[in-house]
Image (cartoon, rainbow, N blue to C red; front, side, top):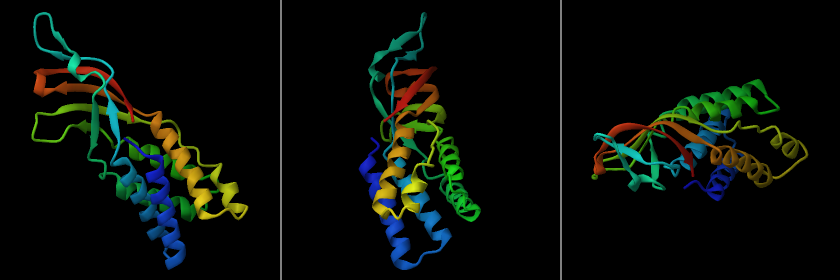
Length: 190
């Protein structure tokens, strides 16, 4: 389950470290991308409807309703996310729109949610989306001399709110119950 406090802490730690150690734009972008990816490591999707077990007629598998399925492969888009954040820095984008777009693009790489082995997987494969990440409210706080903690709390709040509105839309299977027919599903992020 995603944690706003975890994201706040990771972002604050990154930007304090960059300030205290004189880090480069690349190091700052890598750290910010790392903070977001580490936050996403706890992402799960909640299944709202039954999957399907083969039969005539097909049999619903209600055992999946309400189950939380963790994200798989969440680190795959980290490098692209970092490069996009760095591009925003280089462009001196005051609205931080490039970073918001980069986060949304990173989310599109989250195509698989699956329970870990050794049990047969309960899985969802599809397209992940979140609400637009509009970071423009962060800039005035920083420009007015706000502390890193204040700026990152607002940034984390915006990112977290966007993720909490997210879903994965695709197909689900539950091999442990024999629900092997890919069933359409839209699962909410938590």
